[in-house]
Image (cartoon, rainbow, N blue to C red; front, side, top):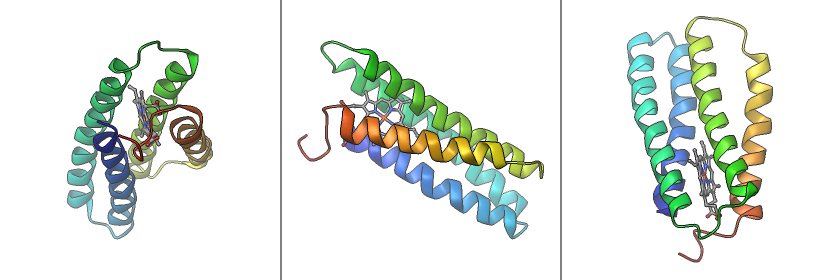
Length: 119
Ligand code: HEM
């Protein structure tokens, strides 16, 4: 499950930047398709994240925070692509993007116990 979770968000991260570069080169249709694929990936990230939560014996505040920040990252993906598509200002969301990613990686890899290294 942890591998599926990591694969899903890693793929989403790559496709997110692919979508941005497609938009930059004016490929509107391809951008829309990648955006759709990304939405499916969001569901997979949430499903695998929830699956991991179900395996936890006692869910403490760090797990809740991890889930909330994970959802926040997904929200920022969606907001950024929506605003980029409409050529609107994105700076506030890029700041959130960096903060949320640092937090989610810290919580996932450092703070919380499960690891892809010991399945
Ligand atoms: C794009 C969004 C997300 C990112 C980048 C992300 C990232 C990560 C990372 C890096 C790990 C640690 C993997 C490891 O230690 O090998 C992890 C684990 C986990 N994630 Fe996510 N995640 C996201 C969304 C979510 C969501 C939405 C949920 C809940 C619904 C969730 C729940 C969990 C849980 C329960 C774990 C196991 C924590 C542990 O005990 O180490 N994640 N995630």
